[in-house]
Amino acid sequence: MVARAVAMLFVLLALLLASPVASEGDDGMKAQVKQLCQAYVEGFGADSVNLVYHHRLNGPRGLEALASPEEIGARTVRGREMPYGYGSGIQDVPLENGQLLYALCDAYDATGDEYFADTARKIFSGLKLVGSVSPVPGFVPRGPHPDGKSYYPNSSRDQHATYVYALWRYHRSPLATDEDKAFIAQFLDAFARRMEKNGWGIRVEDDSEVAHVGFSWRQRAFAGVVSLVGTLSAVCEVTQDEELWDLLEQYSQEDDGFRWQVLHPDKVSERGPLTLYSNQFAMDLNALARILTDPGRRQQIEDYARDFAEGALRSNVFDEDYWRRLDWADKWAEEETQEALEPFGLSLDQETTVFGLYGAFDPQHWRSDDRRVRSVSGKLCFGLPTVAFHCALLSEDPQLVEEVAPAVRDMVEQMLAHGDRYSHGENSNRAVVLGLHLVALRADDTNG
Image 1 (cartoon, rainbow, N blue to C red):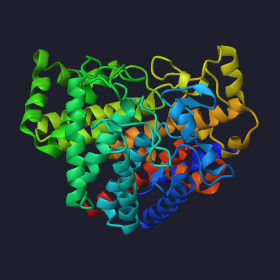
Image 2: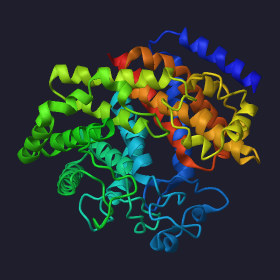
Image 3: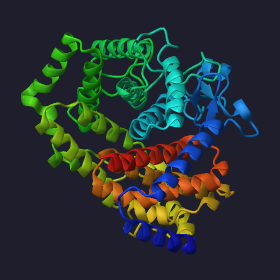
């Protein structure tokens, strides 16, 4: 483990000293990202629906790695009642495919590489199914299963918001056909109408109750504010519907414009503890910065995105005021958590950033017989850094991009070398997404 950390340190130093100008190394990086993306789609994807899943499907269990259609219909996972499908392998289909499509569009627009175009078209076709499998217009389900029809109707904020941004991003891409754009506009209009009807809170498919993570987006906290302003802005740009533009202006001016006050960079510290899924909010900020036409407001959101990312990179991951421990330590007691960290040379008493976590990462731990070691390796040492690195790349701040680039490159290489040992798709998905965004940003630097 020490040797791995030292080697990683030298890699980071060497790459940080390298010129930011595109080079043969960047061409090699693009080739590696394409190779990893292909391996990911082949390993976790189902051709029947053109979607990737949270569980590996080309392993010994095949489709049985996912909850069966019968379990999904009963709203269970492995015999336990689970209406929102956690552990089913289909619970994050809109989230993971949505972030993938967003990154693929960036990579294609920046490079013109046909592989990225073909893969983006494939994933978009799968996401069209996600948006049409439910009889309720504008609802984003968890799933579907590769059978193309089975899904969990208790969805969440991350599934809905990411799906909206993925469609918006594809609509902006030259890859989108007139038919694609018509579908996107129709879905986004239905999404906004349903959300407005429900007070901008996520409800289950039949509206009978609030969804598992269905908090109101009309709240005054950052998560609600950025969700409402971001998604409604995306809907308005696509649909150009005057009624929705008026609604967006109404929400922007409500209570002396409090939403824009919440989104001021001075308020970044009030966003609450970061989690394993906080990178989803970086997508809100990235999309919103691209949509805004007012230079002052655009700069405000860009500054917020930069400060948000910088906080994720610099903060002590063991300080529960900054990072939620539940994501990687479950409900372990303090003593058990300390014991789980020992094999990695980490301690709750030692201040550590995401860079320190990734320096302690060793892919050999993915084959450990100790569940705690696998959890610390996957969710803490690899997972939390992907959150911060994704935020940095989506901030598009040149300094932050250069700072995380060496680690992102190493993540791509580690997944290429050892990803076949990884049976769950979260880190595989994120390594690909990070690599795609870095490829896009490097190409943009060159073209600029």
